[in-house]
Length: 331
Length: 128
Image (tube, rainbow over all chains, first blue to last red; front, side):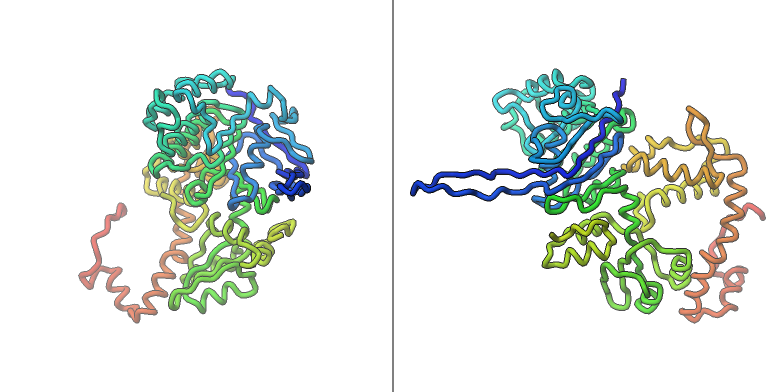
């Protein structure tokens, strides 16, 4: 039986870490500043959808994902997780935590025991655990479960995490950079298994990764975090609709691009590629065809890079140019 | 696969249209499911579903409840018609524009089309 997939809703969620007073050697107290990991996050995670969570290092991805699995608690704001119409606060909520499987980069395995013991633990913990699937994936990834986690390579430990995440069949399944150390064939095998199992057992999957080009086709929705805020959260289609590229002879491209906002330009000899805001209309498409100019879609990776460049590189300008609502870029 | 500049669902739709036109997919024949598409081409099933939705609206495919997607009766004929119209604008016009750039004369083009210059590769035509 496939349980109803879980969604999530966050309203003005703030997470601060580490604000505390400490005693110095001289006997005075010093107050350390808190680190703000999430700074007023508003987000809706659609149930039953594969959502990509993108962001640069320190953007708040792991903090956000650990909140959903109740591994951490918001400093303020409201956070609810569950199936449509029955969302609950996850913190110290046995029903939510049983149904949310977060796989972190660390793997959360029992270091002193064989890997098989960790698998038994997760099998007991997860109500929808599929032991056959777990066995098949461990064979596929060639993991020796008689070894302790420390005896496994980084890639094999990630493969154990991938196995736990998939075999748990949790209504909310979260993979937080679970590809680390995996070689390319293993990563692609992992993506294939996600899609195959998702198609048969639809559930909500959140996947964070820095390998945007590799994973963008897996996503239906995308969330981009930047400096603790949600820069954008929408469907991949909407995100790609934010821009398009024109490639061809300079003069012809200029003519079609005239009057449109330019996001990026690359020139090679007499050929130019410009990335423009918005979608090409019928006139532009016809003109491009007639002039031998190729119209291309905007790769997620390119848009992501432009949206999250540091303020010195003009992140505000890029975000404004890409028509991002909220104008929270570069703060 | 699907490495073109257009969105993937557009490329999937084009591939299915091409298969119907070429007769590789016969009318009333079942098309791969969204799940098969997703796992074969490593894409989100919703992306494949979007391609199918467009093709249903065009009358190329139709849905049989609980069974899947099938090629609609008359789909090939309809595609032939639209593609014939588009052929001149989309295929021939750019080729002729390129011929202009290269200084190839109309006479040379006609001779090529008629096969009287000895260069035209043999084509298979069902009509002859």
